[in-house]
Image 1 (cartoon, helix red, strand yellow):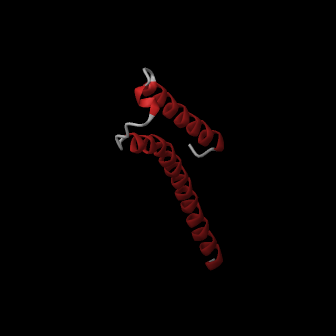
Image 2 (tube, one colour):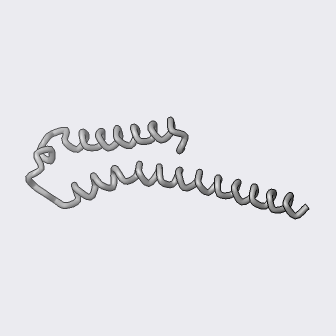
Image 3 (spheres, helix red, strand yellow):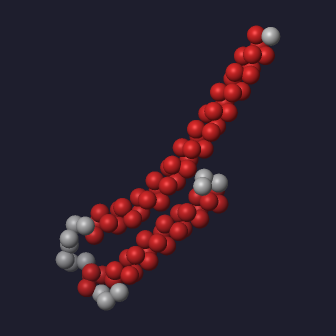
Length: 84
């Protein structure tokens, strides 16, 4: 009886750890997705004047499109891997 109880308790602990691992993977995936716009905003927040795309007519739109594409690709990648 003691062994059955120990096995049941261990199975319960492993189920809890599995759920924690799944939550950790989801949080890591969302952190990676949010790191892209944060990094780009950090670079553009330095107020450099020598960046050529700052003087393009569509420079701002291109940067936003690149950010959206990178975040979309990461979302799709993590979705295919089962992290999201």
